[in-house]
Image (cartoon, rainbow, N blue to C red; front, side, top):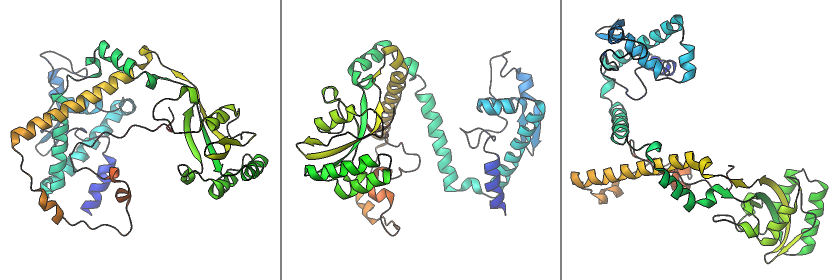
Length: 351
């Protein structure tokens, strides 16, 4: 029954509590301003006033103000009136009652609670340790240098997305084209014919999808390999969903070509690209600074590893291949570990 209460309480109190960044803050802790400085419109004396007392734990006016200030604009608007703030205070009291009961029963000693505290501690430490690495700390010169060295990312030609059915002989290609042209909006028919006839090994499993590509004369790096004749034919199709009126010949065979998407050319000036460039450089520099710090700490700590013992660890796997077995990138990192940066989006992602 108590476990059920904890679960329901956790959902009900998700928007309140003692702050998202610290699962177990110091009792009666308040944000401190300079002498005489108003914080959230309150003087130091006003902030210290007690709103509620639960055993030895006091909830002050300043603490409630700080909790409200840490929430999103929607919640702050919701609790604008004194009546609504009374509801918020009640949620804080309920949160504290549950926390005290959980501590009394020894839940604060559970390994997962200690692990969560470590994670929050590391997060706070890294935020303060690298507080000087901000998007604003990136110089204009570095932004310009990045823009000039990655020009293709900000200036891309027009692209289309197409599917094809590649066959060996012209007669088969013409027969498939006639059938599709008679039913241009029948996607099930297209997929069925693609399954039956497409002999392109690279696109067979995705019903002939070639993804997005540029004209042969404007191709950029990391674009899919599309025969020039097929690419030119795709750009000649005016309507998305339409078919090229003729079968297309290439060195690989004969192709039936269908247009499935279109992207306009993108031209972004340095001013337009500045904000995402700063965000990217900020993220990369912060990640590198963290890696440098970890290397430094590892050297100073004289870490010893017994890697031979890893083979003794036995893991019970479910029957059949799991998603992580099929794709190791999905494997979870150890709790509290820094995960690798996600791979960059492929060319098929929409801008």
